[in-house]
Length: 140
Picture (cartoon, rainbow, N blue to C red):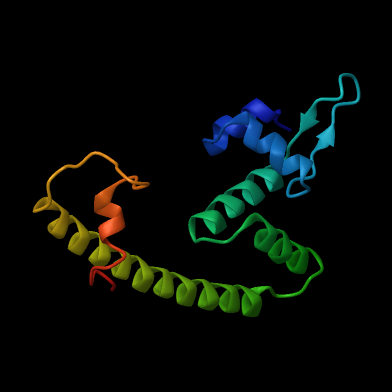
C-alpha cells in the first residue's frame, strides 16, 4: 500500500491531483485504520496510469469515469471509446478549420495595418486599426 505522496511520485504527478481524483471518485483508496490516511494499491497505480494515458488522448475526466464504470461493470468500453474519439477527431478538425480561418484574417489585418499610421483615439474611437477592419475585406 502507498500513501498519496508515494503514488504521486511513482506516477509523476502532483499529490493534489491524486487527492482530487480520489475526491471525485476516479480512485477509491483504502483508509489507514490508525491515522485515516489514504492508502493506494497496485491497482490504483494501474488505474492512475490509465487515467493519464486517456487524458493524453483527449478524453475528459467525465468520459474516463464512464469508461471506468463500464469496465467495472464487466462491460467492454471499446465501442464507446471509439465513438468518443471519432467525435473528438471531428471536433478537432473543425477547430483547425476555424483556427486557420482566424489565422488568415489576422494575417490580412496585420498586413493592412502595417501600412497604416498610428493614431490617437478621437470622436468615440478606441483603436482605428481594429475599427478599420469593420469596413475592410479581411474575412476568411
